[in-house]
Length: 84
Image 1 (cartoon, rainbow, N blue to C red):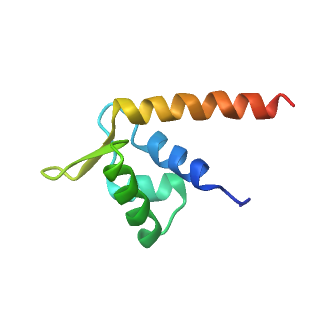
Image 2: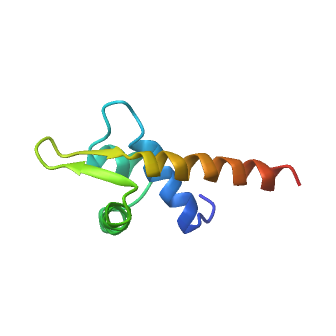
């Protein structure tokens, strides 16, 4: 697997949690190809910055409106870079 930047990893995590029902920790780990210590660190960062929310009752992580905005901007920047 090629090197992924922090922004790439954040986008992968947010994409995993973007489903209508959100995603459990293991689903996010598997889809973003991160280890448990790595995913815990990233999820803490995303929670602190309001990009993702965690439902303690059913242990589901869901992307927030701010998280969707991040993903949209990420996709736009990715398209700009790929065109060159």
